[in-house]
Image 1 (cartoon, rainbow, N blue to C red):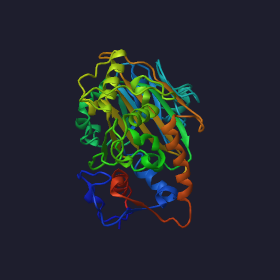
Image 2 (image 1 turned 30 degrees about the vertical axis):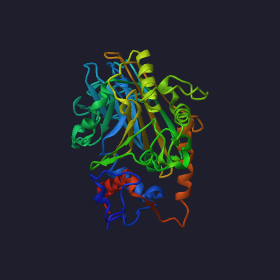
Image 3 (image 1 turned 60 degrees about the vertical axis):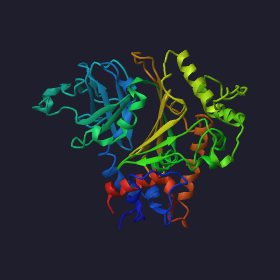
Image 4 (image 1 turned 180 degrees about the vertical axis):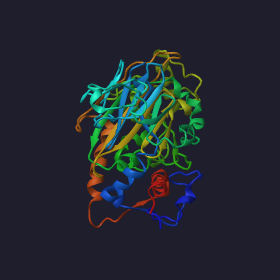
Length: 434
């Protein structure tokens, strides 16, 4: 028997699923131990994180020779480096002398990779260059003591890493996502920021919070005025999933004949920045021309705002201009693709089942041929505000982890609408075994 208690879980793959469009014989049960058990975490640490492709950073972090970024997942540390020859490489972040981490955080302009402990040094291609007091070690072959390599590759502006040198190529790992997202020309996006925040929750609690729209009517009621949270089509590949979400339209939960003012106010209060407007203040609802909808007006405002920034998205229709395509990448990343921006939300495992790091990367669409610039990158305290909607998500993630520890709770009960959450656990079955 698999760890995921659902004999029909495999039947969801390939189906078009919405919150209201698929009947099932009963909920899918997921054991609570997956979120609180040290034993299950040990299995993930051994079988998932050293073998799966993971989003590490953006190309903007490693755009020039000597640029580097350190990616951490639990105890694992991978150093992404742009070599002085222009090649992108990744290494296990461990000195071949005594194992000390060679670089931390992110930076630019490195001429070499030098361990701060005893000052062993490598070239940016990973070959050993210098050993202080080398004579005392006897014979040391520079190639034999090269840094331990990891795989690295990119899709659009995103850099992925994998410690398994025998893993499938990233292009195969991503399945149909690059083709599905080809409309967005993701190479045009430039990274603004990468923020890491500690989270007192299991990494799956965080990832699952961005894997369904069922919770919008629970904690994001401000959004109901401008998003259809019920009829968003979903699709599953084997490892990954997607939700196609309509923005600028009211939720069916609000009934019929929802006033345009409700849609407008809801959109502004949550994502007014897409129109260049301050979400903390009110703005009068614009007139809607005959033959158009408030969604058309919002789409035109988004295009106009982008045009003011030198970006042309006039070729997108109303649905593309306003909507979002939300990809959930196994194991731990959500990639939100919009006409005007891109967001990546991921969770990196912590050192216990009850902690992780929540990572938010934000991108803007640059004018064609625009150069890359250094994004803001840093760790922020746990009480840092991340905006109205994100703050609501974070608050729930904390209380969810506490609830999972209650002794009477044995399993989670998931609906078909939560198929992307189910798909995560189906893959964990495959990777972790019974």
